[in-house]
Image 1 (cartoon, rainbow, N blue to C red):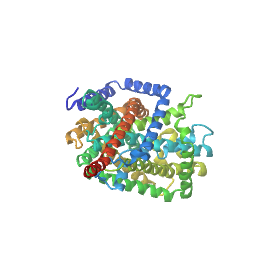
Image 2: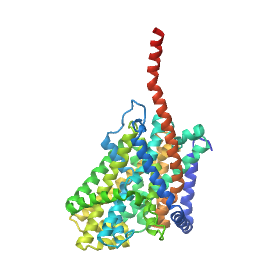
Image 3: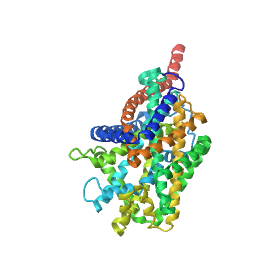
Image 4: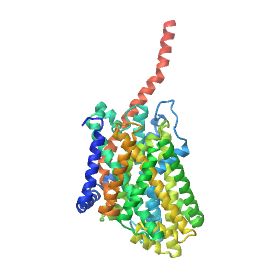
Length: 513
């Protein structure tokens, strides 16, 4: 298990086996996936919640403590990308496609089915934004931050390979180059494949729903396979062009279109209500952050927490190797403090504003203007909620088309980063993986996404994601300890370097005397 292409061959074989099972035994795969999800929710929900809170605490500690001034690279290194482009790439490569998918559907879902209290009320409206902010707030980005800062430190500061196994070097030493390291990289590779395939699945379902809404194209597996095939060709073309060209420009285009859609809705929608919802939501979220983060509902069946909070926290953990690896790749030269403040808090504010504009406007339409068709759309088919929402605004067709284009470009940028990271891991940490490796993983991702849609639709996508979160959470907790050891040793080395000239000078003075 020590060959140069061991990770690639093992991961590819397991991925192909998953695809084969999905094709030839779809019912069995769906049953296994759902039973795994139920077991995790009923027995390990507390572990997922606790792990995510530890990740956030760890990120804040190393960012604000004595470790914060350590640079992710040599002391002379400076950021490769300017801050605005860096933030755009952070956003585009992680949760952009999901924001478009859930922007209206999730807040409205909580409004009509709150975690507690009376449904479709002022109280449930406040709870809706509060829990949306929990699910898309600092907890999510802390999962990415743990992996990102750890990998960037060991890759750029300690000059180890660009594989997540490198982050365990302080604990196992050179064993990261042996079977232990290969095993870690195989787990990470599979989690990335499932994570990005799930994202493609969500985007495909929404684009198919939008095309049905606008042009009557039928919603079904054949249409979805065609959409996946087209998107696959697009993101393969983009990834071949390289990080500096394709990814950079698509990320900036993404942010431009996202801000355009956001500005349209902010101006056309109930602007004053949106701003009030934005600030009220932040206040409620900050005030209740600890309680919500540990809420397990031990005196009830816990179905709401299982369906939403545990799903989202499991999702962020499952996505952490992908997004964290990409964030590490684009963050060379930044200090740990700068990394944490930028990678955790700035994207969160953008997400909060998005949900206030989209979800807040939708709840306002239902609560204050009686537009209950939006709530009915969410109850029947969440993929159609966004397009039903646009019906109540001028230029609804234009807004629907813009949203679908945004979903497609968001996915292309996400797939770019995923394929790039998969290529790095498959080639033993090669920072510039070959085109052939990236194309193979691009095709595999498309095939896995089609299988997940075929075997379970939306629930199948959710089950696949959360099932991968438990082993990854364990790895990430160990990674926190390993990174702490590495940073502590680095401070000792830096201190010794700073004291060395003084010691030499004192010896010279002593000899002269």
